[in-house]
Length: 142
Image (cartoon, rainbow, N blue to C red; front, side):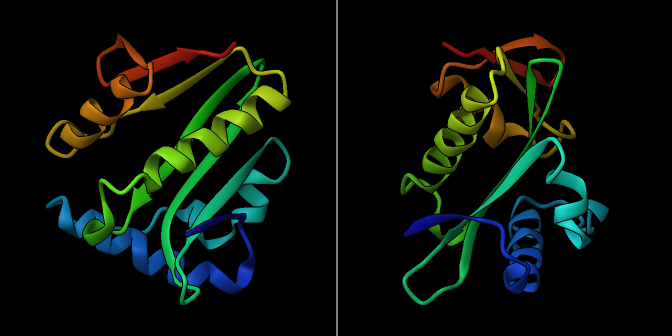
């Protein structure tokens, strides 16, 4: 597995992976508009990363935007059949490294709708995030 900055040639595979991940969580898969034009949504104040497998398929993703020294995570998804193999952790570490480089002081993330966020509610605390509002977590960067 390797992590790369988003490349437009992976867009359709990324969308398929995210819809598959959402479906596995039991939510009605819908397409978020930022995924249709990632450079327009993330290039100015953030980045978007992909986890790519050995056959060049998208197996994970994470987006990050930074405003006023606060980084916000978006679209951290892993292909359901590949969870718990360190892919999400590697993507999160990549996003946090980007945030530190851009001098962000903290990272925040919204866990999503209550019926779907149970995995996120377990994942982020394992990486040092704490709840600061209902369904919101943060981590101070050092």
